[in-house]
Length: 68
Image (cartoon, rainbow, N blue to C red):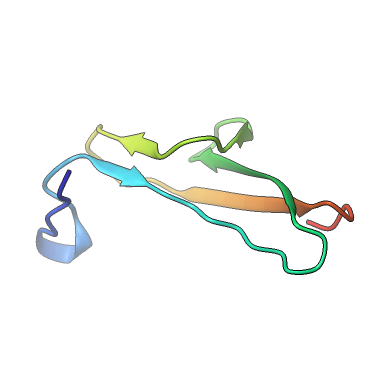
């Protein structure tokens, strides 16, 4: 529901990451993400973060012309 910021940019509640990609020329084919050192996963719904700690999010999108 409602993420509340704590001290030093920490959140006090669970966090849901929502991503949107836009390509006005060919359209977006898909978006991928990975948290910390995980494998790339296809983004299909908000990404829940419920464990305490520092997280690194990487993301990329591929357009329908094949550009990342």
